[in-house]
Length: 579
Image 1: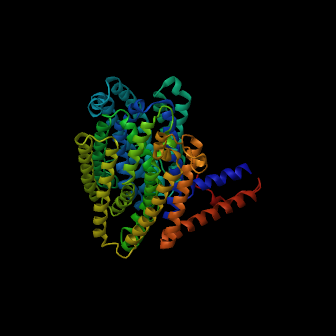
Image 2 (image 1 turned 180 degrees about the horizontal axis):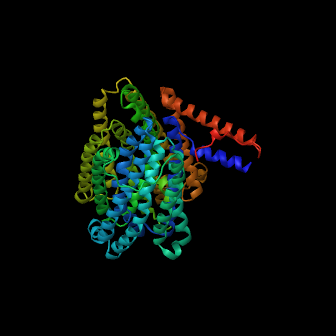
Image 3 (image 1 turned 90 degrees about the horizontal axis):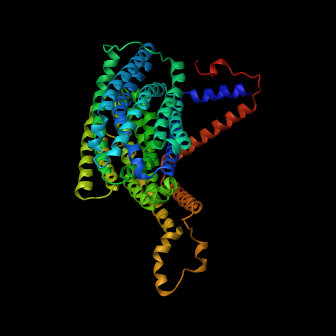
């Protein structure tokens, strides 16, 4: 029986997701779990450290992230996956796997060279970009940075495996890997923070990145990946990857430069970087759950349809676009309305003060304005990648980064606005980006006039607006603190609140009441949104219900299959994944 369960479990985790919706659903569920762990991780941080202390830990990721995202992510999403997937589709598996081995070697070589540079010059770099830090803070940030380079080395190898697995339409294992990363940080912090201080989560990041790598390696190897002892720069497929990746690498370099500007501006406010990062960690949830998952699941199919099947390409894109809008817009509204309860529940602790909560809530609201834009940009950029055009998204991204940096400098240095203005500049720049990108893609494929994108967008905005208005009113009616402020004038006349007052409002000073308030308001808001989209005939709702029904049927059939299996029953060999 145990052997049967393990075999079926392996089959489930190694299974191919053959449709965009099934792949996106798998990615969505796993990203939700990963982001939940990420919030738990941040909640653990504020239990042990103050917002001011965390600034150095969060800043230490900037330079390692810079070289990782520029070199690894720049090549993987825009260049390697389309090239690798095309070779597989043409039945050139030997060439595809050889390319994967060479790409891994090139990634590690480039990363090693840049790591030496960062290790050597970390102090003067941080001394300039984090000018608001004290000397001790800069020194601590540099120490953490040098250790975190090890973690990013594991990620450099791990994300090659991620690209290989996703190209083969295996999305479950790559989506699970971040869970192990966050678990490594959380457990190390919980058990060693008292003794090691902020060094505990730093070591945890190294352990977690190794686990991220180790969980993906077996499946990649079983599918056909083998190490290649070569740096064959003359390989024609590698040249194609490099050619496609260069514009994206330049784009990400500019984006990382923009993040260094954010660090510079946020370091001028005590705890500012923590507010910015914590607000972003919540705001990124809809983008990761819906925008990224649907965009990633669409890329292999869009890549196959981009040559000679442009009508199918447009249908796939329009469906993915509408699905992202359906999920992301109401989620953005919910985060904006419930920003304070969400921040209090996610990060509330004695070390995270009420002022910290307010500042993070403002940041979250500002980020929420642009969530839809960045979610759609992920899809539109991948549509260009599928068309083997990485130059257009780069040009638009450069303009976007320029707008973002200028707005940030004006808001913080010119108008002296707090940290939330950095998030607002990010959102406004994102809206600019998605408008330009969509316009250029429409021109490239001769429009989407007959694909109901505008109609879906209009209906979803109307439904989300109604939902948000109801949630806003309910939040004010049911929260005792809001009434306390409004009725505080009664004390001047020697009056008090009525004795029945506490029967219809919740005292949100207590965590249980805050949870109830947030749950009730969110549930009613979601219900109103779903009912309104049903009334307006938004077809994405029926697609969602159909998918949920299919998953329910699948889970039921698996459960019945397991319960009817005996210890001596062995499934046919063809049901097991390759080993």
